[in-house]
Image (cartoon, rainbow, N blue to C red; front, side, top):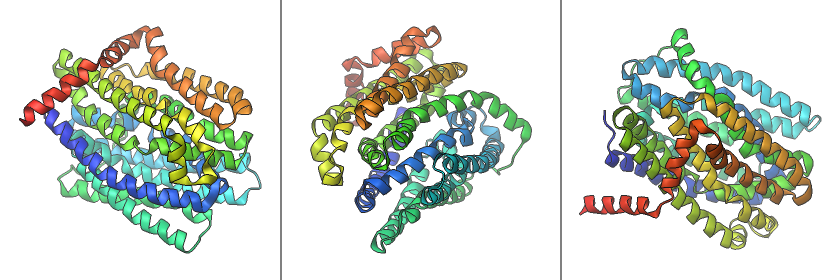
Length: 435
């Protein structure tokens, strides 16, 4: 079925609408929680979340990057594709849970509270595995359903956290909240999947091997992305301490407030770009260029705004105890543009069938990120980690594309997307249709 531009905007609208409510709830409860826990305990939660995040790409087996294309390409066997993916992810999640807890037991030997927090938080891996159904909804541009599911789950978790705050529970209780979130989303999505007429789920080992043969190229690249996003917090915790980790995490949380908007736009554009690749090369390249243009405008607006208003933003949201987060925020927010460029590039790579190149690109970037953190954190503290993130994202998602010939054409589309005429023409087209 042809995915029209109108459907894309409607799909993105559903995602953004529900996510706005969800983010407001999450922001309010998250800020109160951060104030209640303080930088130290908040740092424990952030550290454990980063450790578990390392296991997430391994648990997902790269399938999250290819499932939409699989559903678009083979609508007659959606049930077995989804069912097989769920089974594979659930099996891998168990191994990843054990691995996460084992790492913390070694790295933080004797810290019983940290180990227990990790054990509870790692349950998110199991429930996240069953959330893969959302990619079926994405392929049909029916994201209103997973959006509603997420909203309901967030409301329940918000009440749970309010209860924890009122009763003044310890940090251990807060570690379990994310697991509740993913559990509810997965249950709701499975119920809706059956209600809207999704095919009967089944698992097939041969189809699983076929899926893994195409998705395996995304495992290491996705892991490298997680290294970009979370190595800094782990290294800050191990090299400086929990309080600095909490301050850094507070700054990153401010940046992530708008992440749902970028995610909605990119997720809604993905099936359209993949379909256009099969039908019209010129229109396909135009859609990629337009997506780059949208991401650029949104990212620059956020980066400039947060840099200028870093201090009042942190004071308003977190209070004086987190004042040092302002300088971190003013620097770290600039990696947002280059990070989302990577997400758009990955859609192009999937459409072009060049997944095998992702591993080398991201391994180089991950190594650079670790080395930069090792050099800058001892000198500049958490601000050094922020600088390392910006340099790494720019190098990996922009510079490498100019140097590495197989993906150079993607950078051509990226450069075209920097032309203001692209976004102006898009806005003009939308206004004309409304008239």
